[in-house]
Each structure stands twice: as structure tokens, then as C-alpha cells.
Length: 149
Image (cartoon, rainbow, N blue to C red; front, top):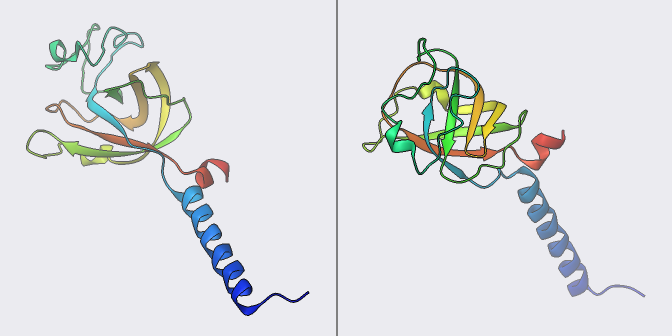
């Protein structure tokens, strides 16, 4: 039985649409997760007590340990539990302070999560440059394609 011309067109168009939808889903980035600020943690457990609710009391520069708080790695504090795992690659995009200013543009881009400090804080594989005002932003997980291949 031969397919009619209209049926062939419908099959071709639906195949193209399906391939396009599948490609979009494979290559799109994960949903945006908002972070409040980057912070410094000297020892591995320095940031354990920080949550989004009590962060304001620490935002002037938090450290339980002595030392230079302009060294180490960048830690991000999220508004909600982040569900990230060590080893994941994420795209960091800063939105800046209340005026939109970004102090350290090097923090933007693809970085690897090296440690999950708390459900609200992760450590990245990027060196901390120094103190800055409260500068938030968002992260996105890598696409299914990048994670798989």
C-alpha cells in the first residue's frame, strides 16, 4: 500500500519536528539556580553555619579561621538547596551588586564543583580574587550532551 503525498509530508514534518525537539532537550543547559554571593571559608568547616537566612550577619566578611581571606577557592551561597555534586561542571553568570557592577569577571564561565560544603554552599575550582560587595548571580548545569559525551 502506497502512502499518499499528504501522509508523506506529515511524516517528514513530524520527523523533523521530533529531531529538533530532541536536539533542543539534549543541548540545552539545566535550569538556573540563583546564588546570593561568593564567600570565603578558611577551614573546610568554616561555612557550615551559614544559611541564606543568617547570611546578612556574615556578609561583611566571614571567617572562623585566622589567615588571609583573599586566598583559596570561590564558594557560592545559594538561596535554595543547590542539588549539585562534586565533579559537576556548571556555568556561572554573575548579575553583580545592586548597581549591576561585577568585581571579578573571572568568576563567570564554566567551572567544576570541587566540594559540596552544605546544601547551600559549593566550592569551585576557581581561585578567589578578594573581597567584593554582595554580588549574586545564577548557575546552570551542563547539558545532557556534555555530561554524557
